[in-house]
Image (cartoon, rainbow, N blue to C red; front, side, top):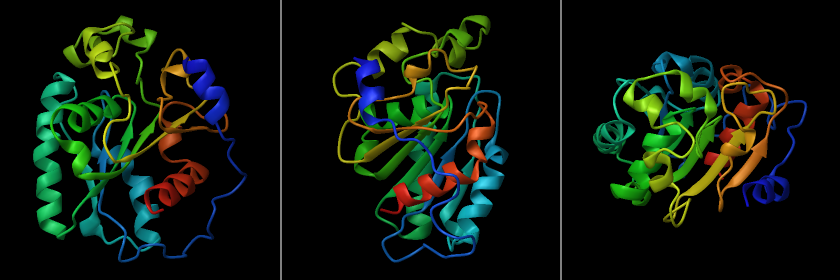
Length: 222
């Protein structure tokens, strides 16, 4: 089923970002962006992308490079994410947020959307190189969060039971054929999401690629 989803929904990237650099796309309907990093990382992972959003008009108050303890269960992170979303909404006065995630960050944010009422507070959700159906790379690490990333884990199985893209958010995933951390590649795509294949990018590089940025920006701002 996943292979069919990927083959029918993937879109290849263009050679350059959609808009010219320096063109502001932030407007009255734009939402604050909450960035969720992945395993063994921090909010600084998003420096390049956050700077690009800022250059396109997003105020710093609407760009939240959130950090959390990546070793803990993704369910625990989801509870903390719920509090961070509420904080960001209160600080900006917005009704909803856009959630942009890398790698494991997709799991806690999906748990939040599915199990903690988060789908009503998210306008657009983005997964860059997310182990949405698990990855065999996680067989080699032992923290709770990593065990939950394993193919067939109770966490991933429960997360994908029923509707993979619940509620009203617009879901989008980006996956690279050259990502050696997410195996198989088809793990990233979700049924009901807009699933996009990137150029040949590494697992870390996907978050700073200018073409991916342009696509993500336009997706969350559409």
